[in-house]
Image 1 (cartoon, rainbow, N blue to C red):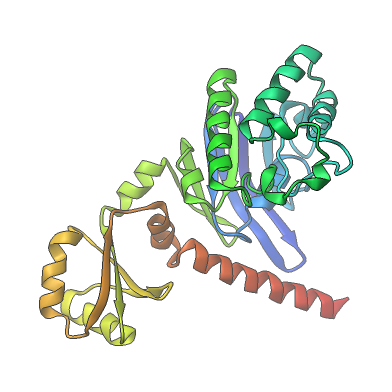
Image 2 (image 1 turned 90 degrees about the vertical axis):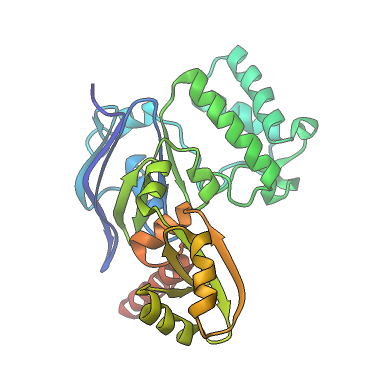
Length: 310
C-alpha cells in the first residue's frame, strides 16, 4: 500500500535562500505526523509544497500516490487544509463562514449542519454563531499551525476534537508546530532546522535517545561555571535563555557532588527529565526559541540582500 504522504529529496529555493533542503519522509495512512521546528525552519514551505500551493525546486512529493506537481487538482480533492493565516470573510457570520466552506468542499446539508454545531461548540462560539466574524478577536478562530494565538482552553478543545475526528474518521494528519505540547499528540515527529530534517521518530523514542536529565544553573559568572563544568566533570555546557544548561545521567544524584566541587556560587538550580525541547537542543545545539531568533535574522538578511539586487 502506498504511503498517504511521501517526500523524496524535496527542496525549495527562493533565490539564494534554500528554505527546504533534501527532505525525505513517509507518513502512513491514519498516522499523525508532525513537523517540529522554529519559525523560519521550513515547515510552512514544506506543507505548501505538499498541498500544491508551492512548486518544489527539486525532488518530488506525493499524496495518496498522486504527484503534487503533475496531479495538483487530484491532490486537492484528497486533502483538507487549515491555512496558517485566517481565510474567513469578515462580513459573514461564524455560521455563514462554516456553511460557505462546507459547500465548497461538497459536504451534504445534513452533515454540514451537524458539523457546524460541533465546531462552534468546540471553539466556544455557539452563542455567537450569528455574530459577524469581523467583530471577533483574533484569538477566537483557527489561525496558525494550527492554534497559535488561541487561548489555552480553546487549544485544548481543538486538540480533543482533532483526536476524536482522527479516531472516528481514520484520517491522516500532517501537523506543523513549534509548540511542544502539540507535538506530543503526534505518532511520529520530524525535527526540522534550517530547512533540513535532523531526526524522525516517536516523541517517546526521541526523548529516550537523550537518556539524561537536563540541569539549568543560574549563576553570577556563567563563563566561569562553563569552564569548571568542563574541567571538573568533563561536561559540555552552554548558555540558553539566561541559564547554564547541560545534560547528565542521574541529575538528582549529581546535584550534591556539583555543589561540593563547583566553586562558582549558584543562585538557583533546576533538574528536569528530557523534553522535546531537550531533543531539539541535542540535535541542533540550541532551543526552539533560540533557533527562532536565528531563523528570523537569516530571513531578514536574505530579504535585505534581495531588496538591494532589485
